[in-house]
Length: 351
Image (cartoon, rainbow, N blue to C red; front, side):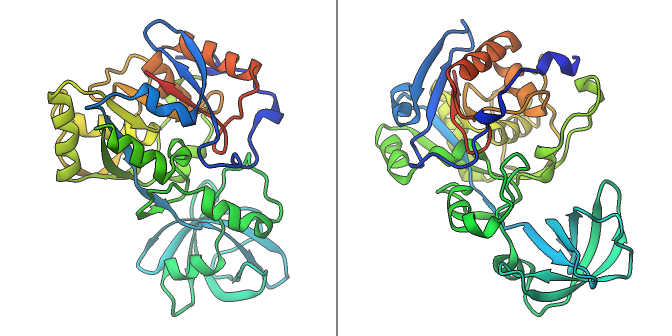
């Protein structure tokens, strides 16, 4: 498929720069994927679209404060994004890194822009990635908790991240976040409050938890002319025995599996590849599943998702689930109705 088919026009002012005042205060576009009908609703009405014996599948990954700042000996500032750790060494992306050299030492800065600890530049990788080794007695998560900021996507502007640090560290995190490891939020889950989840449980709806640690690849634009040429990123996931059983029981009883976010969809459909049937087995590992139009969904019956960037792999996934024409019609409607887009924006329920 040519990437141009996944394009749409979005006025820049519709890109949400901050979350709704109330966590559940977003609008919700409801799209029927079978007939293309559209309803304008609000997320607080989500329970109206759920039924007893359904199963809601949420991603309990926890976003780490992976965005950080550093300084060279010259005083020049560098912006970094923590990606992973192995043997005490960090894999990071560094902006303004063209003049950095291997064997140099930089200083990681705390949130007040003071030097926190040295970090030695070990290896230059491709695509702006580096291996660095912080010199500190603290472990990685302790360091990031002292110096890091929420790793917001580049379209949310935070020239002075400390100004909105309290807001972002709270709202760029789901209320059910448990397992540290994501460097981007599973944004469809941001709309849920503890009260709404409790109401859903009382309706007789199961809530299953999976884990997929969202990686930096979620922000990467597709630079190829066709979807097929693009290489999808890899992300770590896990579904344990208890939650796999909950999902299978719902399927066997005729209930619907409603995935909260594209990350939950990728995880569920990855687990189904092992059975090649409408059931899943407990599994963990890394997924490179690339869901594009023509994909056969085995588990997902409905999904809650935010609005995605033009010409992106996530928009391709949505088009695979609901049909490209339906999705583009819904997106154009959302633009006309001035919905708020992307990570801090409004959401869709596709059923």
